[in-house]
Image 1 (cartoon, helix red, strand yellow):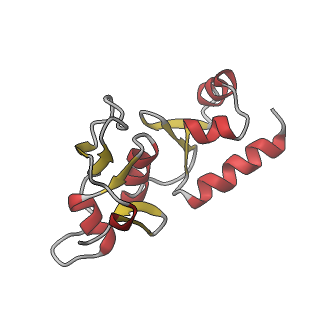
Image 2: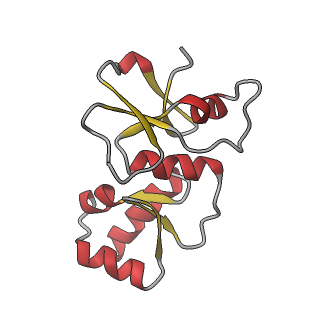
Length: 136
């Protein structure tokens, strides 16, 4: 794999709190074997079911939520969304809670709470770079 591919992955991770998803790496041309090699050498560290942290990236609440989002096809919701929105009574000690469209969630992702059939584009947005449900 060319050094340019790793640079593109690193730039993506920089925008995502030090994280990159397995599907994103594949889209950048990384094979499963290459990903396994990066994990084996410690350049990537598992962060969630299908998300990896670039070694050395500090752990944060935003990173925890983004890892769950990258692994789930979901959106931060409930208390996690309230934390991201900065609503009174919620702080960055919230845990990652997500909602996902029915049949799109990963079964092995414990951060997912409900599934819905009624999630519309108007119900979602991005806050601090994290896909999230709107306050309403």
